[in-house]
Image (cartoon, rainbow, N blue to C red; front, side, top):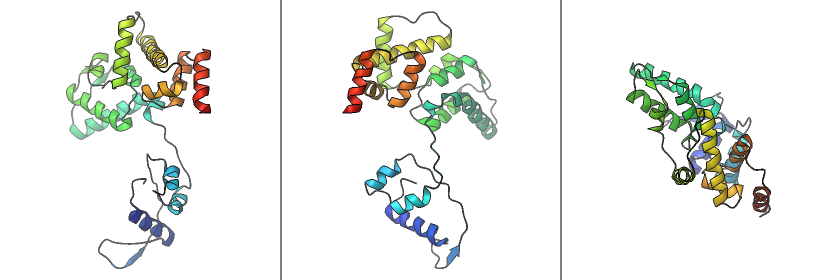
Length: 231
């Protein structure tokens, strides 16, 4: 919805208000009784303020807004989505579906998914093609997951600093994530907002991860972030 041009916005507003449309190439108005469900990944209130989206159309559409968080903020949905997209691929192609180990699903959950659900669907399809009917483990998953540039640099620094201890996978992933966040905070001098930018995430998501991992008790982190908020 947020990508509609000004002419298309005007036509849609007219269709909503008059409850009638015209077919392409036709000259006769057709009465309609429809329910409109629209979606956008843009900040429409900001677009309205900037004059990029019609205010009257925004208020016509903004009756029951539903905010859908990005996938990185609902990682508990990843296993169900993996099985869903795997089933769709099997139905579409007839290929036998791969069998996912628990560790493989945990590796999928540990990824930040900057491309959101579309990226997840593509990765699941790629693995289904490459390993049809086979068992998928951590190695196969990590072989297709991209590593963001900032994470790659931080991971290299963490790996050089000290090897990960021998832990169960979930604990090892937490330790790895903890070290990445701590390294980003060191580079940002305790500024959480700057650390979030380095890790290519938003500050609320980083706060949730820090709280889960027990990071953020130092006064340096709090003071630096309070300075950022005040500014």
